[in-house]
Image 1 (cartoon, helix red, strand yellow):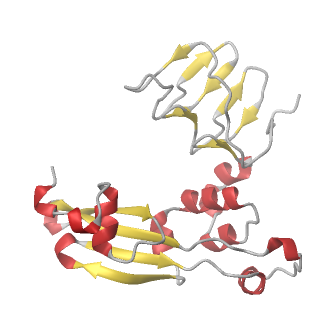
Image 2 (image 1 turned 90 degrees about the horizontal axis):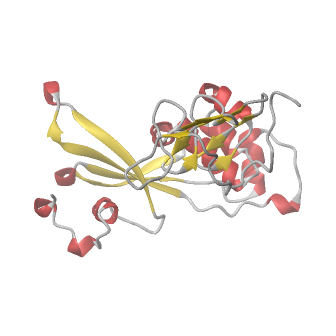
Image 3 (image 1 turned 90 degrees about the vertical axis):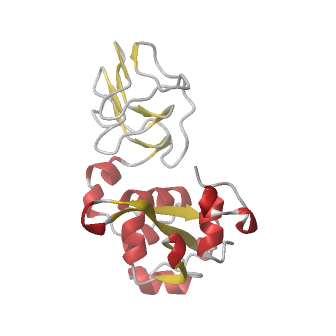
Length: 216
């Protein structure tokens, strides 16, 4: 048996039942552990996050007989995406033809890098909320993708129809030392047009129902 196996189709969700063994669980009873395997058994070691196989720095499954399988929030991925994650870039992610793997690659690179990319533009800012809305324009068709990544592919089945990625960047209300604030970047639906609506969405509220003074 090879020491590195994928055991299934990459880019697909894992629905297997967790193996029995020493199990760490979250408040909802799901296998979960930050910084180590949630399950240790005779079958091997298994990393879970909120009930889904997930590990950011190695294989999420280390089988007792050498099997190594990589998962990102329950989705099986090629091992090199995890082992060489620091070599990933937004442009390399955009070149990926598998939509699910492309999404995962962008998540691995991080929203911070996406916001700094030339294709990401600020479309709204609300100073009193310390919130800025950004839009990352996904290439619309094959020719643009080929120009971006230097591909010579002419396969008509590879036409892109991805939605743009919209992100809201919000600074925490509490100041840290020297006036700094902790910042968060959250993906929001691509139909949101204002930073206020984006922040309201994170609280499951409509824009007109959002009153910051009433935040808990």
